[in-house]
Length: 305
Image (cartoon, rainbow, N blue to C red; front, side, top):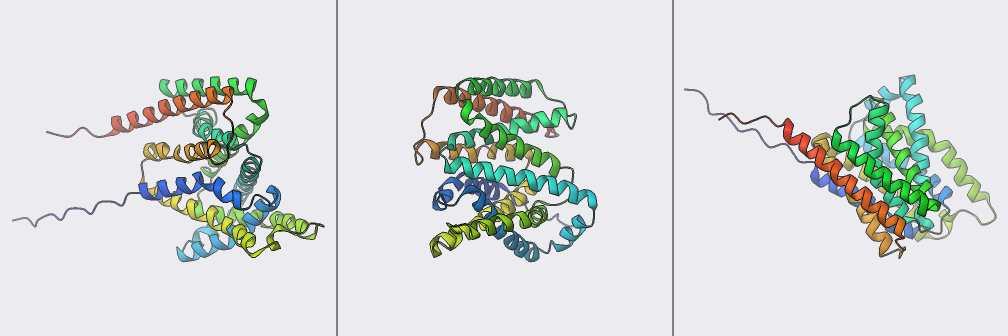
């Protein structure tokens, strides 16, 4: 008589971590209201300065120091991570500047476009093949962007810079074998010297650094380090546990929150060109996600009767 089989314990779901990460990123503009008086360059400098020690603490807690050492031992890794550090620095700077200057909808649009740019980069750089539905999504997005270029050209550069900088960041990170948190730790270390230089320059300026204006503002600036490291850690956990198709669907949560905040809290006017462009992007996103989910269903094994 064979021993009874013990059922396997269900694998933990990464959905709560994914929703938490994208919710934090979605509500980030509300945090940026707390530090609105800090110039964008200075804030990004302080953000890097405070992100690094928080990343180091989490790396030590999760016993990932060997992964950091392994990545640092390879010159190719350092070269690629230097490029990704530059890209993420540009992305942070443009995003903070956009929120501070009431271009919230343009920032939201950038992260709606981002998944579609990922598809294009995968096609032309990694030689991946697009499905017919994905080409339809790309065409819809292109129509929206061209319309926006004609009717709201002043903010188009924000959306495209955010979309392409983050998409290229992701593409390059795929070329280096290092986890999200160890990678961010190394990128923050690479950016530390220029970040300290920017912070020191503002500190020495006649107006002085915003960091010592008040205890509340100083604590708010330090909070930026946590709001950089924590959601990325949650995202890293979710990415290991979830199907890409589901994670791709959750990805649209953050720009949707930012879009709603732009219309309500920030009181930004939705211009006709923007409204049409958002409509095209939302339709493209729907086609994109539908195609991912359809492929996922097709890959499921047929149950044996």
